[in-house]
Each structure stands twice: as C-alpha cells, then as structure tokens.
Length: 304
Ligand code: AMP
Image 1 (tube, rainbow, N blue to C red):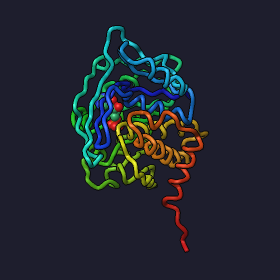
Image 2: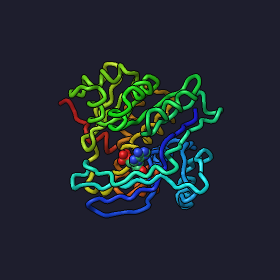
Image 3: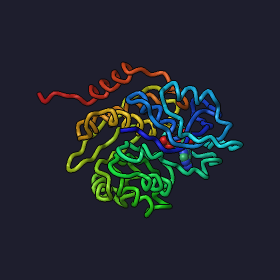
C-alpha cells in the first residue's frame, strides 16, 4: 500500500502571544506528510505550489523522504498563503487572510499506480475536491478524511458523499456536534458513524481525543505540556501520526487504531512546542516512542 497525502502546501504568517513568524512553511498536507514520515516512507504528497515556493522547504521535505514528484509547481504562480492570530486562549484563532493563489485551481490527479490498494489521506480541502480524488480511486483503498466547520456549514451534502467512502474520519468536538446536529458527543458519534466512517476520532483540543468503533469507545488523554507556542497544524499533525502509524501496522483493527490515536496525539504535542513545522523537523523514533509511553503512563492505574 502507498500512503498518499492530498491537501494544501503553503506559507503561513502566524502570531501567537509568544511570538510571530512570517512566510513559514505551512499547509495541511505539509504537516500531515511530515508527521507521517516518522512512521513510514516514502509518503507521497499530492498538492500544488507556485515557483516562489522556497527551495529550502523542498529540501527539508525531501530529507524526510517525502516524495514530491506529484507536488505540482505552477510556473509564474504564487503559493497558497494563510495568516492567523491566536488569542491568549490558544483555542481561539482569527484567520487574518487566506490567499488561495495556485491552490484555487488545484486539481489533484491520482497517478494510475496509486489508484488501487492505497492508503489515502484527504487533508482539509473543499469536499468536492476530496470527492474528485475518491472518484479517481478504484478497488480497495483505506481513506482517512479531515474536514472543518466551514465545509460542514456550506457544503454539507458534498461532505456527506465523501463520508460514505471514508474509513476513518478525524474531526474536533465542535465539528462533530455541527455535523451530527447533536450536542451530546456520544450520540453525535453514533450519528456520524452511520454516515459512513467505520472509525471516528473526535479531538477535544487540550482534553485529548475519543475514538469510536462499533460499540467501543476509547479515550486518549492529552499530554500535559508546559510550553505551547504555536498550535498551527496540530490537527493535521495528529492526522499524519495517526495515518503514518496505521499505514505501517500489519493490520487495521481496534488495537492498532487505538495506538494510532496515541501516536497522532504524541506527534501533535511535538508540533505545538515550536513555530510552524520546526517541532516536527528534527525528531527521532526514540523521542516519539518515549512520548507514546508517557501517554500510556498518564492514564494507567491499578484496580487495587
Ligand atoms: P490547522 O491548524 O490544523 O487548522 O491547520 C493550519 C494549516 O492549514 C496552516 O498551515 C494553513 O496553511 C492551512 N490552511 C488554512 N486555511 C486553509 C484552507 N482554506 N485550505 C487549505 N489549507 C488551509
């Protein structure tokens, strides 16, 4: 199985109460691919940038064995740009600007050799584009989908269609409530799973994540971090750790999916410790494993 990641690659301007960064590497597919690269190689990234996309970013991604053969470079085009400002409560973020640039005409093409038996991660893009990717696939694939409030509010029916083909959906709690039109998360999870996804992961920010599959609910803790600098890309990084681990696992079942949720959480905890992708650029397997164990110890207790 190949691991394909489809989504945005861009340059971000980010302000948090702890600092400011401009023209930093960003984009959902960037965080997903980088995070997944610690579990499986090569990750194939499908996206688009302009010819202003800095070479240093290309080199860094390639150093992580991320295959960029299908990252289209539009001559004379400008790379997608996004700006965000976080409040003291880092859960609150204002989008300052979104310049789609070459991303406006993004038309993901799935090469023939990846159409069957692939592990496909659909980053947070408009559902009609996610569906475009799904329509190109043939046979047996495992599809992980991310989405956001905007698409639930504006393109609900298109999203429902995507969910029919989705094996694992990863969303946050407010998105789950909006999607299910139900305030209770347990009831919402049942409603969403009936829409298609066999596995549903609901992230609760600094309060961990819930995994739903059949009648089982698994609760993953959040890692108690003292230094959170930049939450940008944390959700995508979760998706990347989840997908990367699962892609490398011999089987997809509740045990491996539980571990994938913890690895996703561990990778997201590294992401927020530094600006942009910096927290993900120089990790090693031991550090990641140590944090995985840290997660296990957080909620382990004896019955006597
Ligand atoms: P997250 O913090 O998980 O919401 O992801 C933030 C990343 O998503 C940033 O690096 C942005 O470049 C990217 N992003 C923001 N808005 C969009 C959008 N409308 N479409 C695609 N990617 C986006």
